[in-house]
Structure formats: C-alpha cells, structure tokens
Length: 249
Picture 1 (tube, rainbow, N blue to C red):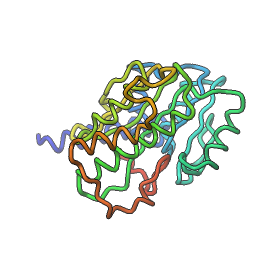
Picture 2: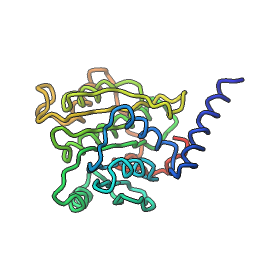
Picture 3: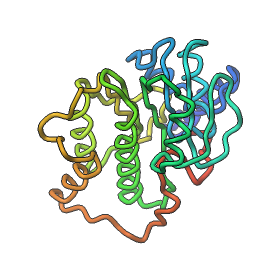
Picture 4: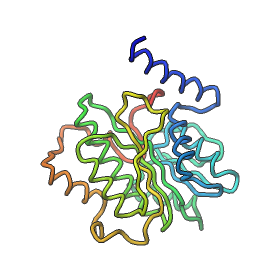
C-alpha cells in the first residue's frame, strides 16, 4: 500500500465525513479539532471569520457560539448564507468593511478572530509561503483593531522561512501562543495553525509602537529575505480569497 494512496484515502475520508455532517468543506474539522483542543470559542461569543468562503469555519463557529452568540464572516468572494452568521463581501483592511463589521457588532465586542486564509498559489513554494505569511500577519494587524484584552486569535500559517517573525509578533500581543496541526490536515501539508489566547492589554516592550507587519518585515530583513514583486498583489488580499477555496484544503 503506497504512502500516496494512504494520504489520499485519509483526505477523502475527512471530506466524506464533512459532507455527511452537512459541512461545506473538510476544513471545518480543522477548526473543530482546534476547538476541542483549546476551547478558543465559547458559548455566547462574538466571532469574526476572516477569509470565510465557502463557509465551513463559519458553520462551526456558529455551532460553538450558540443562539446567544454572533458570527461575522468576511471574504471578497460571495459566500452562500450560513445559518447563525452574517456574511460580508469585502476587504478586512478597508474602512468600509470595518464599518460594516462594527455596525453588525453594535454594542458587542469581538471575542475571537479566526482565519483559514490562503493566497493564490504560484507553484513556487518559497513565494507562496512568504505571501501566506504576509497575509496572516495582515490579518493579525486587522484583528488587533477588534480583539479586546483577553480575546483570542487563530490563523493558518505555512512552515518555512520567516515564520518566527509572525510567531514573535503574536507572542508580543498574547500571553499564550502555540502552534497546532489538526489531524484533519493532509499528512503532506506544511500548514499549521497559530493559536493565540488572552490578548494582552498592551504589547510587550519588543512590539510596542510597531505593527505585526513591521515586525515581520524586520525579521525577514534580518534573514536576508527579499520579497519578489512579480506576484499580483491584487489577488492576494486579506479577509478573503480571490480563487475558489479547494474542497480538499
């Protein structure tokens, strides 16, 4: 029995389970496993799902917060309605989208921001990994405008050069930062998830006066990493995906 056959069969098993339970993507089980391990979402919480298309994570979040909770999903792509969630088409870095989120929140504060965001893939791993790293860092910066002290943040990251820059930036803003790879992820995948709990009232000394992106860029500069500029940045935005999210992710 080949390793490839085993991996494909395992991947298909998660897809079958997701479909049988009514989830739009197998990636819903990644968030479910994160939830089982860390309890990042509590009943009654307000949750923002950045890059929500096609809605699998929003489905899980809505289940976890229950009737007293609130889930808001943001993506550039139109996403079919999710029961128990409000869906916004927009860019989380743009003021208009932020205003719409605050209108839905009303007097509530967000408790958790989650993101399973992925970039357009060029086929060059180093480039794709760097773009993904920048996207996740932009999401972290955007989340800092919403998450109150004590709140949580979850984002997908890919192992590779520069990852410690994002991990360190997160650790400067949260008291507990861990990396976790759900079993629902493909065995051959380099993806992992950054689980950040208990936002600090203010960043630690190293991160004060700087955005997470500035910290990441400093880290990459120290490593001598040069970001290629031939990637279409208009398709690698935050809060969404320009490409359809593949079901097997």
